[in-house]
Amino acid sequence: QVQLVESGGGLVQPGGSLRLSCAASGSSVSPYAVAWYRQAPGKQRELVANIGNGGITTYADFVRGRFTISRDNAKNTVYLQMNSLKPEDTAVYYCSIQYLGVWGQGALVTVSS
Image (cartoon, rainbow, N blue to C red; front, side, top):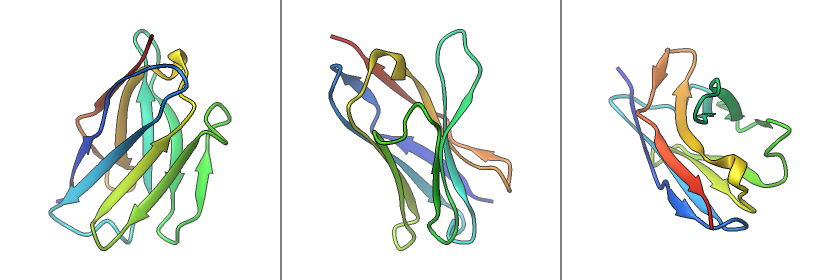
């Protein structure tokens, strides 16, 4: 059974950057698409970005051009590089393998001055 652990969250000023990591254990994630979701207070969870097993990426309109999803199969890790952060990006960010129904515990990102 694959387990996912997010890290790299924290407090950052508007315009700043953070890189989230999603480290997998228990099994390789290389055969699977991996996605990042986020959930802001009082809002529904929403898809942020997805990377397929072949490396094809898709993004939500609200992060396209600012966020980059990538994967390092040798490290069994998926990343989310977040640049030009805005206060509305404040949320708990989760990585997930939808095919397996597996979610991480989440990483809090707070964008505030």
